[in-house]
Image 1 (tube, rainbow, N blue to C red):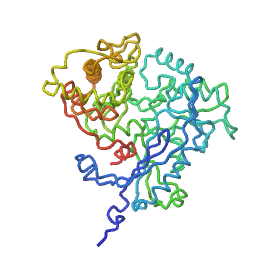
Image 2: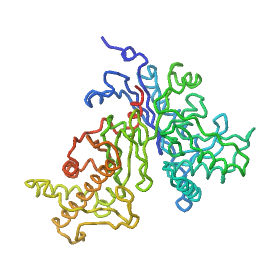
Image 3: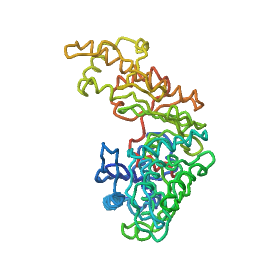
Image 4: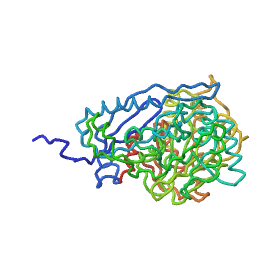
Length: 472
């Protein structure tokens, strides 16, 4: 007897959407309440089907620091993704949809959710002057905020209000629309509602659960010259029910009209959730070009000096920081193939040694002077092993230099978690690791010495899977 997969789940499937920079990925996941939050062996079987589609890259100009995109590109990609996912036997049994999108990607829309401007992407840096105004205002009144920097949503909105030729509207009201809000508008028709993770870089006060007066006044002053009324979105928590799917969208793609759409989160938080981290003391280390740490904590931390801010995640807080140290330093001296060969040499020649014997030096491998986290020093100089390798250096000399760099990266990671704990975050209990550095087994062995806690493999590397964990 062949079982119809439709009968196994009965509208209890979740579609997770990850709206990225170069494409959109969708994962259909089983809402098995006995599995969600259970062991990785069971959890790994929750994803039933996935697909992805590409889309044009943003229009980027390094000279002007511009990175922008037509938001309709996202909708066209979403339509193509739905067409692809609909080939799955599970498609008609989807009962829930939740999405994540890039943080601080934003545009201005009219009251009906139609774009009035292009979307400024997460890496747009045009709002230099606006960022200075925000920083001065925050410093003057003595507040810590996630809305600092030219890439913050608040600075970008101020830039759009001043620089954009807004399309003609029947009234003077304009609404602030994050990338995730625009996707949810297409799915449900809802306007003027966002999640607090995306709202953080717009200046939302998570502790007061309200828009601060200084943010409201700053936007009013910016929009005054154009006689515009800026509407800040209403904010609710990630994972809360938003609205049932728009009937036309449901009919077009063969979905049930009872599909429930939920408020989502940012791409980085969805990536954190994909790891399987779930309890205070769980940390996720991203070992990429730079080292980024996220730690689930019972208490929030906001500290502009170290670039630390916190997102609420359920009943806990997700705190994090990013160092300038990371894999980019390794690649500035060696190719990937060289690193693999040198690691093999280290493993062969140090197999008899205890790794604890390497735990002596305090190198700090950064490419350029200046560090923000876990040390705040704009003039900090790199601390590297010596001598630096040359073309005629022996394999032993090159391996010793690489070993010193890896020890330094472990030291930075250790300092990072210690810094978060010193500031009041929960003590690290388990660490999940993602990023290209996880492929270096020798580096991972060293990390276990510097961080003597449980090291876990992530459940998934897909944010489209991770965002579904918001649905309980």
